[in-house]
Amino acid sequence: MRSMIVWAMVVVVVAVSACDVRAEPISDSPRTVTAAAAGFTLDGVRWWPAGMDAYQLATNWSINRGCGAQVDLDAYFGSLPPNALTRFDLFAALSVNKFTGAVDFSPADAVFAAAARHRQMVLPVLTGADGACESGEFKQRDWYVDGWRTESAFGGMTFQQRATTAVTRWRNSPAVVGWEPVGEPEPGVCGRSCAFPDRTCPADAGAVLRGFFDAAGGAIHGLDPGSLVFTRERSGPAASAAEVTANPMTTTDADTAVPPSSSVSTTGSRSRLRWRSPPMPRSLMGSGG
Image (cartoon, rainbow, N blue to C red; front, side):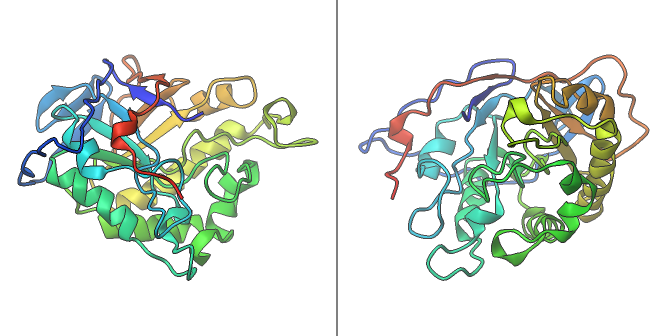
């Protein structure tokens, strides 16, 4: 089940009725977010990111297949407190027109534009480990080895091509805090099925995951120098121990930012981001279809 992010505090979203007058959009200017072992800074000031896991923001039922309810973007971003951070799915399937099969970035463009209008920040997730809202197929160990470079997904692109396209297209948005290559990565191997009890964690899972983030994260940093690469690790017996080993900044059930510099110490303080799962207020949602 998708969940709301609680990063240091619970964000209370104010319901917006049809009669409410929306605030005038605030002029946007680039924000500077940095990460180190001691934590995050926003425009040079210590910052603890708090916000929501609003995965469905790029859903537009008139264009794409959707993933969750369609949301009134101005109502959503306009209801957030200053300096909030929203994590959302920027999946390939949401950039394909369901009627024509052609690539259509307009639903995602609308998310970045609305966030910028309200001077809010977003963390795009480029794909999910479990295949939800995409192919439905769990990404196994081999995908993290080389499948991300060779296997085509929605829109006819590999993950590598999709990530390159996404970062290049939106890297200059003032709303972008960083990039999350894969939501809850787990380089496990399926058994009789890919259900959690049937998955195993190979001995080299840690090295595989570390190699993936070095390569994919390095490519993102090459396209968007100074950006942060985030990861959210899943706890559990299958591969969680390997995941934490693979990235010393990570903690299970946490989002962690990996700065674009290997000189940053990752020993000691860690950025732990806790999660809850209350529903998004219906007043911010449109109707599905």
